[in-house]
Image 1 (cartoon, rainbow, N blue to C red):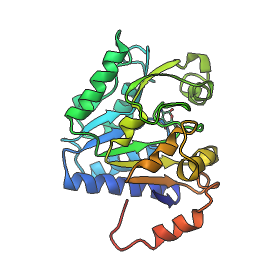
Image 2 (tube, rainbow, N blue to C red; image 1 turned 135 degrees about the horizontal axis):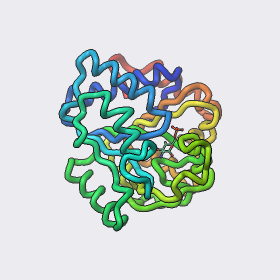
Image 3 (cartoon, rainbow, N blue to C red; image 1 turned 120 degrees about the vertical axis):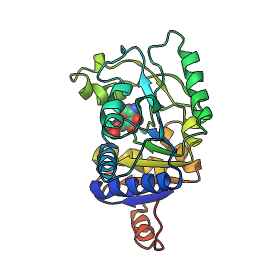
Image 4 (cartoon, protein in one colour; image 1 turned 60 degrees about the vertical axis):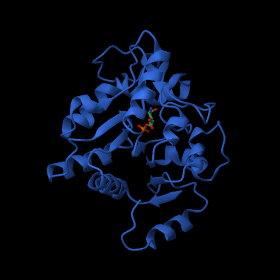
Length: 259
Ligand SMILES: N[C@@H]1[C@@H](O)[C@H](O)[C@@H](COP(=O)(O)O)O[C@@H]1O
Protein backbone atom coordinates (compact mmCIF):
# COMPACT_ATOMS: atom_id res chain seq x y z
CA UNK A 1 0.00 0.00 0.00
CA UNK A 2 1.11 3.49 -0.77
CA UNK A 3 0.28 5.94 2.02
CA UNK A 4 0.50 9.69 1.46
CA UNK A 5 0.16 12.04 4.45
CA UNK A 6 -0.40 15.65 3.41
CA UNK A 7 -2.81 18.58 3.77
CA UNK A 8 -6.20 17.98 2.17
CA UNK A 9 -5.61 20.33 -0.79
CA UNK A 10 -2.40 18.50 -1.67
CA UNK A 11 -4.17 15.14 -1.42
CA UNK A 12 -6.82 16.37 -3.85
CA UNK A 13 -4.15 17.51 -6.32
CA UNK A 14 -2.25 14.21 -6.00
CA UNK A 15 -5.40 12.18 -6.67
CA UNK A 16 -6.31 14.48 -9.58
CA UNK A 17 -2.82 13.91 -11.04
CA UNK A 18 -3.54 10.16 -11.07
CA UNK A 19 -6.85 10.73 -12.88
CA UNK A 20 -5.22 13.10 -15.37
CA UNK A 21 -2.41 10.64 -16.10
CA UNK A 22 -4.97 7.86 -16.62
CA UNK A 23 -7.01 10.00 -19.04
CA UNK A 24 -3.86 10.92 -20.98
CA UNK A 25 -3.24 7.20 -21.45
CA UNK A 26 -6.84 6.21 -21.87
CA UNK A 27 -9.37 8.97 -22.71
CA UNK A 28 -12.26 6.48 -22.47
CA UNK A 29 -11.23 5.27 -19.02
CA UNK A 30 -13.72 3.85 -16.54
CA UNK A 31 -13.83 5.82 -13.29
CA UNK A 32 -15.38 4.58 -10.07
CA UNK A 33 -16.95 7.43 -8.11
CA UNK A 34 -17.57 7.66 -4.37
CA UNK A 35 -20.04 9.90 -2.59
CA UNK A 36 -19.49 11.51 0.82
CA UNK A 37 -17.42 14.52 1.76
CA UNK A 38 -13.98 12.89 1.38
CA UNK A 39 -13.72 13.06 -2.44
CA UNK A 40 -15.21 16.57 -2.81
CA UNK A 41 -11.79 18.26 -2.92
CA UNK A 42 -10.73 15.88 -5.69
CA UNK A 43 -13.91 16.59 -7.66
CA UNK A 44 -13.35 20.35 -7.28
CA UNK A 45 -9.81 19.92 -8.54
CA UNK A 46 -11.01 17.88 -11.54
CA UNK A 47 -13.50 20.65 -12.35
CA UNK A 48 -10.65 23.22 -12.27
CA UNK A 49 -8.58 21.05 -14.61
CA UNK A 50 -11.60 20.53 -16.88
CA UNK A 51 -11.92 24.32 -17.11
CA UNK A 52 -8.29 24.33 -18.27
CA UNK A 53 -9.01 21.71 -20.96
CA UNK A 54 -9.08 18.23 -19.36
CA UNK A 55 -11.90 16.34 -21.09
CA UNK A 56 -14.14 13.63 -19.64
CA UNK A 57 -16.25 13.37 -22.81
CA UNK A 58 -15.37 9.71 -23.38
CA UNK A 59 -15.19 8.62 -19.73
CA UNK A 60 -17.61 6.06 -18.26
CA UNK A 61 -18.38 6.36 -14.54
CA UNK A 62 -19.76 3.92 -11.98
CA UNK A 63 -21.08 4.79 -8.53
CA UNK A 64 -20.08 2.59 -5.61
CA UNK A 65 -23.57 2.39 -4.17
CA UNK A 66 -27.12 3.72 -3.89
CA UNK A 67 -29.84 3.94 -1.26
CA UNK A 68 -32.82 1.62 -1.68
CA UNK A 69 -36.26 3.18 -1.91
CA UNK A 70 -35.49 6.86 -2.43
CA UNK A 71 -37.68 8.09 -5.28
CA UNK A 72 -35.94 8.94 -8.57
CA UNK A 73 -34.71 12.52 -8.37
CA UNK A 74 -34.54 12.58 -4.54
CA UNK A 75 -31.75 15.12 -3.81
CA UNK A 76 -29.87 12.66 -1.54
CA UNK A 77 -30.00 9.69 -3.88
CA UNK A 78 -26.46 8.96 -4.96
CA UNK A 79 -27.50 9.37 -8.61
CA UNK A 80 -28.57 12.95 -7.77
CA UNK A 81 -25.48 13.63 -5.66
CA UNK A 82 -23.01 12.40 -8.29
CA UNK A 83 -24.90 14.19 -11.07
CA UNK A 84 -24.79 17.45 -9.09
CA UNK A 85 -21.25 17.21 -7.73
CA UNK A 86 -19.44 15.59 -10.64
CA UNK A 87 -21.26 14.99 -13.93
CA UNK A 88 -22.96 18.38 -14.30
CA UNK A 89 -19.66 20.19 -13.65
CA UNK A 90 -17.65 18.27 -16.23
CA UNK A 91 -18.24 17.34 -19.88
CA UNK A 92 -19.11 13.81 -18.80
CA UNK A 93 -22.28 12.78 -20.66
CA UNK A 94 -25.23 12.17 -18.31
CA UNK A 95 -25.80 8.69 -19.75
CA UNK A 96 -22.19 7.73 -18.97
CA UNK A 97 -22.98 7.72 -15.23
CA UNK A 98 -24.07 4.32 -13.96
CA UNK A 99 -25.65 3.91 -10.53
CA UNK A 100 -27.29 0.80 -9.05
CA UNK A 101 -31.08 1.01 -9.38
CA UNK A 102 -32.31 1.40 -5.81
CA UNK A 103 -35.90 1.80 -7.03
CA UNK A 104 -36.03 -1.63 -8.73
CA UNK A 105 -38.75 -4.09 -7.69
CA UNK A 106 -36.25 -6.90 -8.14
CA UNK A 107 -33.17 -5.72 -6.25
CA UNK A 108 -31.07 -8.89 -6.72
CA UNK A 109 -31.65 -8.58 -10.49
CA UNK A 110 -30.63 -4.90 -10.34
CA UNK A 111 -27.46 -5.90 -8.48
CA UNK A 112 -26.61 -8.55 -11.08
CA UNK A 113 -27.29 -6.07 -13.91
CA UNK A 114 -24.90 -3.62 -12.25
CA UNK A 115 -22.11 -6.19 -12.07
CA UNK A 116 -22.73 -7.01 -15.76
CA UNK A 117 -22.57 -3.32 -16.72
CA UNK A 118 -19.19 -2.92 -15.01
CA UNK A 119 -17.89 -6.02 -16.76
CA UNK A 120 -19.25 -4.80 -20.14
CA UNK A 121 -17.36 -1.53 -19.67
CA UNK A 122 -14.15 -3.53 -19.22
CA UNK A 123 -13.90 -3.06 -15.45
CA UNK A 124 -13.03 0.02 -13.42
CA UNK A 125 -9.62 1.60 -14.11
CA UNK A 126 -9.48 3.95 -11.12
CA UNK A 127 -11.82 3.67 -8.16
CA UNK A 128 -12.17 6.66 -5.83
CA UNK A 129 -12.96 5.60 -2.27
CA UNK A 130 -13.76 7.12 1.10
CA UNK A 131 -14.00 5.17 4.34
CA UNK A 132 -16.69 5.08 7.02
CA UNK A 133 -15.83 5.64 10.66
CA UNK A 134 -16.54 1.94 11.25
CA UNK A 135 -14.22 0.92 8.41
CA UNK A 136 -16.88 0.40 5.78
CA UNK A 137 -16.13 0.81 2.08
CA UNK A 138 -19.01 1.88 -0.15
CA UNK A 139 -21.78 0.45 2.07
CA UNK A 140 -20.01 -2.79 3.00
CA UNK A 141 -20.65 -2.68 6.71
CA UNK A 142 -18.66 -4.66 9.30
CA UNK A 143 -19.36 -8.35 8.78
CA UNK A 144 -19.43 -8.04 4.99
CA UNK A 145 -17.90 -10.87 3.03
CA UNK A 146 -14.51 -9.82 1.73
CA UNK A 147 -15.41 -11.60 -1.53
CA UNK A 148 -18.87 -9.99 -1.86
CA UNK A 149 -20.29 -8.61 -5.10
CA UNK A 150 -23.01 -5.98 -5.63
CA UNK A 151 -26.00 -6.80 -3.42
CA UNK A 152 -28.46 -5.41 -0.88
CA UNK A 153 -27.05 -4.50 2.52
CA UNK A 154 -28.62 -3.21 5.73
CA UNK A 155 -27.00 -0.07 7.15
CA UNK A 156 -25.73 -0.04 10.71
CA UNK A 157 -27.10 2.46 13.23
CA UNK A 158 -23.64 4.10 13.19
CA UNK A 159 -23.76 4.73 9.43
CA UNK A 160 -27.35 6.01 9.57
CA UNK A 161 -26.21 8.33 12.37
CA UNK A 162 -23.16 9.47 10.33
CA UNK A 163 -25.28 10.10 7.22
CA UNK A 164 -28.20 11.77 9.05
CA UNK A 165 -26.58 15.14 8.26
CA UNK A 166 -27.85 14.71 4.70
CA UNK A 167 -31.40 13.97 5.95
CA UNK A 168 -32.18 16.95 8.22
CA UNK A 169 -30.17 15.34 11.06
CA UNK A 170 -32.78 12.58 11.38
CA UNK A 171 -31.20 9.09 11.44
CA UNK A 172 -34.67 7.59 10.96
CA UNK A 173 -34.96 9.39 7.62
CA UNK A 174 -31.84 7.61 6.31
CA UNK A 175 -32.87 4.56 4.29
CA UNK A 176 -32.18 1.26 6.06
CA UNK A 177 -31.18 -0.61 2.92
CA UNK A 178 -28.77 0.05 0.09
CA UNK A 179 -27.42 -1.54 -3.07
CA UNK A 180 -23.65 -1.56 -2.88
CA UNK A 181 -20.72 -2.88 -4.84
CA UNK A 182 -19.21 -5.71 -2.83
CA UNK A 183 -15.70 -5.78 -1.46
CA UNK A 184 -14.86 -8.29 -4.22
CA UNK A 185 -16.25 -5.87 -6.82
CA UNK A 186 -14.12 -3.03 -5.46
CA UNK A 187 -11.01 -5.21 -5.37
CA UNK A 188 -11.47 -5.94 -9.10
CA UNK A 189 -10.79 -2.28 -9.99
CA UNK A 190 -7.27 -1.75 -11.29
CA UNK A 191 -6.24 1.17 -9.04
CA UNK A 192 -7.88 2.13 -5.76
CA UNK A 193 -7.45 5.71 -4.52
CA UNK A 194 -8.83 6.22 -1.01
CA UNK A 195 -9.16 9.67 0.57
CA UNK A 196 -9.70 10.21 4.30
CA UNK A 197 -9.48 13.34 6.40
CA UNK A 198 -10.22 14.24 10.00
CA UNK A 199 -9.70 12.64 13.42
CA UNK A 200 -12.94 10.64 13.18
CA UNK A 201 -11.31 8.46 10.51
CA UNK A 202 -8.03 7.82 12.36
CA UNK A 203 -8.95 4.44 13.87
CA UNK A 204 -10.50 3.15 10.63
CA UNK A 205 -7.42 4.27 8.66
CA UNK A 206 -5.09 2.57 11.14
CA UNK A 207 -7.06 -0.68 10.95
CA UNK A 208 -7.28 -0.52 7.14
CA UNK A 209 -3.54 -0.04 6.63
CA UNK A 210 -2.04 -1.84 9.61
CA UNK A 211 -4.70 -4.05 11.19
CA UNK A 212 -5.37 -7.74 10.65
CA UNK A 213 -7.52 -8.50 7.60
CA UNK A 214 -10.98 -9.04 8.98
CA UNK A 215 -14.64 -8.67 8.07
CA UNK A 216 -14.94 -6.59 11.24
CA UNK A 217 -13.04 -3.83 9.40
CA UNK A 218 -14.04 -4.36 5.77
CA UNK A 219 -11.51 -1.83 4.44
CA UNK A 220 -8.68 -4.12 5.61
CA UNK A 221 -9.42 -6.14 2.43
CA UNK A 222 -7.53 -3.42 0.53
CA UNK A 223 -4.33 -4.97 1.88
CA UNK A 224 -4.96 -7.78 -0.64
CA UNK A 225 -4.99 -5.43 -3.66
CA UNK A 226 -1.77 -4.80 -5.61
CA UNK A 227 -2.32 -1.09 -6.32
CA UNK A 228 -3.85 0.94 -3.51
CA UNK A 229 -3.11 4.59 -2.72
CA UNK A 230 -4.27 5.81 0.69
CA UNK A 231 -4.31 9.61 0.88
CA UNK A 232 -4.79 10.98 4.40
CA UNK A 233 -4.34 14.25 6.23
CA UNK A 234 -2.46 14.54 9.53
CA UNK A 235 -5.62 14.02 11.62
CA UNK A 236 -6.66 10.86 9.78
CA UNK A 237 -3.06 9.60 10.01
CA UNK A 238 -2.90 10.18 13.77
CA UNK A 239 -3.05 6.49 14.70
CA UNK A 240 -0.74 5.10 12.01
CA UNK A 241 2.14 3.26 13.66
CA UNK A 242 4.44 3.49 10.65
CA UNK A 243 3.68 7.11 9.72
CA UNK A 244 7.38 8.02 9.71
CA UNK A 245 8.14 5.31 7.18
CA UNK A 246 5.23 6.29 4.91
CA UNK A 247 6.37 9.92 4.94
CA UNK A 248 9.95 8.93 4.13
CA UNK A 249 8.87 6.64 1.28
CA UNK A 250 6.64 9.30 -0.31
CA UNK A 251 9.17 12.13 0.11
CA UNK A 252 11.96 9.98 -1.30
CA UNK A 253 10.06 8.51 -4.24
CA UNK A 254 11.96 8.50 -7.53
CA UNK A 255 11.42 11.51 -9.81
CA UNK A 256 8.24 11.30 -11.83
CA UNK A 257 6.60 8.68 -9.62
CA UNK A 258 3.03 9.41 -8.65
CA UNK A 259 0.36 7.15 -7.25
N1 LIG B 1 -21.41 5.12 1.09
C1 LIG B 1 -20.59 6.21 1.51
C2 LIG B 1 -19.14 5.79 1.48
O1 LIG B 1 -18.74 5.51 0.14
C3 LIG B 1 -18.26 6.89 2.08
O2 LIG B 1 -16.91 6.51 2.02
C4 LIG B 1 -18.67 7.13 3.50
C5 LIG B 1 -17.82 8.19 4.19
O3 LIG B 1 -18.32 9.45 3.93
P1 LIG B 1 -17.54 10.79 4.21
O4 LIG B 1 -16.49 10.89 3.14
O5 LIG B 1 -18.57 11.86 4.07
O6 LIG B 1 -16.97 10.69 5.56
O7 LIG B 1 -20.02 7.58 3.48
C6 LIG B 1 -20.98 6.75 2.88
O8 LIG B 1 -21.29 5.75 3.77
